[in-house]
Image 1 (cartoon, helix red, strand yellow):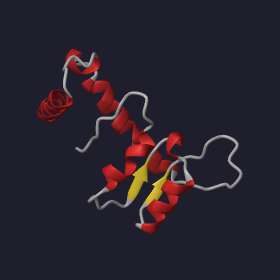
Image 2 (spheres, one colour):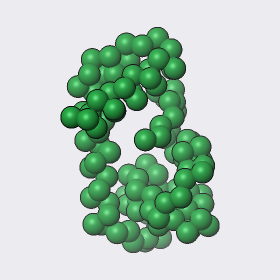
Image 3 (tube, one colour):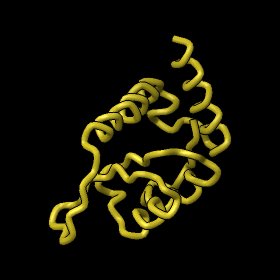
Image 4 (cartoon, helix red, strand yellow):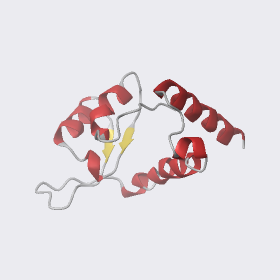
Length: 113
């Protein structure tokens, strides 16, 4: 598992470069918020399939694998599971390092369940 803590007002697409650094993958599954030409070009350059639906009103139609997009629910389910832990849901920890440690701890607990 890899994650990067961002300020609440920062958009997720700003952290894609840091998340993809050093990772070898075949597909990038993202929601409509990740529909950006720059990101699609970056993924195509690295031969990574972009499984991203287009925003409404897009001029150029780009198809995506709808079956692979269904896998995105696994990530959403993980977030629902960790939010069941009060310390995570309320951001109880004061520092980023402690919050990160709690995310890893809860993740390990969920894997052993």
